[in-house]
Length: 514
Image 1: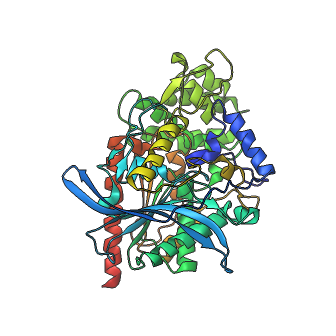
Image 2: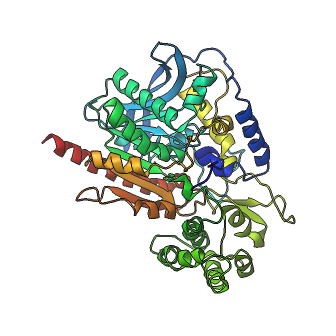
């Protein structure tokens, strides 16, 4: 993208797109812009409490887990010893495992500006906030249950809240905040945290893994290379959930044809999912068309009437959208249009994060409609209450002040770099895989996610060279959307795929020693 680059705001897990989605979104965007013009000093309440260590026992189907839960924070300092940031974390470690052979996984969410509560309580942690269903209610009870799909069976878990998220905060002033609220400064802070945790907890010998969602997935290859080159630490595997690999494929101008091409299979999945199961096989025709004839006709431009006729007809067939609409838009359907039009007949709007989740259109008779996202905004209240209650009650970590599940001021002040090109991490991914021939990568997506479409990752991953005799990068796509793991069946399939990656990586690691 050869122009002065300004990313759209990916709200929460990918804060930049969703900030403009709903009623109240304009206010949040304006607030973020004000934050950009006038960085504020984060409210300093009393000091964060010391580490809280509790012993836990969890009854799960067919097994009992006994483990130690540690909630606390590390204070990062500059070379002179001055405090810069307090980074909160929650760690779960099995009591019956050998530390030298027991894997440990560092998990972060996205945004930038989202805490780790999403992966923590909706996906891989020992406890689960059930949100499976056709709707998500903000007034849903925030009661947690044991998570049968927890990864604690095969890895210890460390959930990290970068500065400005959760209870974590910058304490070194505005210049320090600018460093942490940037692509590279963020990676530097995470690398420092990982290295310190490994040293203080005596886990340098342990196999190390990373799990990150959305912008957290974007962080993964950058953090892997940073640790390899600067800290002397190597990840055995990366699990990238609904990741962004190249922001130019999501945040470019509306004239970029590949943006429409990457979205089409997810639009086809949206239609298929209302009738029955979705799979890569059932979407094969949509994928083939999106990367072939559709892309070719899009490249011809909207002035080619024959091309417009062809794409308008085929897009209507794959998506189920009104043929008159697809013709009027020249076969080019963006995310916001899809949200409003996919269920126009029932006066509903769908979530950009999962087209299967819908709410009544608050402005059904208006040409334009602002609405809160039926997934991202609806889950904010129950998830916030759940994580605050879990920390203070179950883990006995009683911090004062606000817990930031989603902090729009972090996103509003984020420094994306000084260059004219959009941020991407494929070069770092290639370098990390090239340097470590044993590393494995799992890329996980949901079919009905319009925010980070799975087909964008598929096309970009196809551009990676072989990098060795075996394929060490896998793409898995599940029923559901951006947070596909909120569905029990998808969470189980995701766990199985992740465990397979761990087993393969550990076998490769063991072969290294032979």
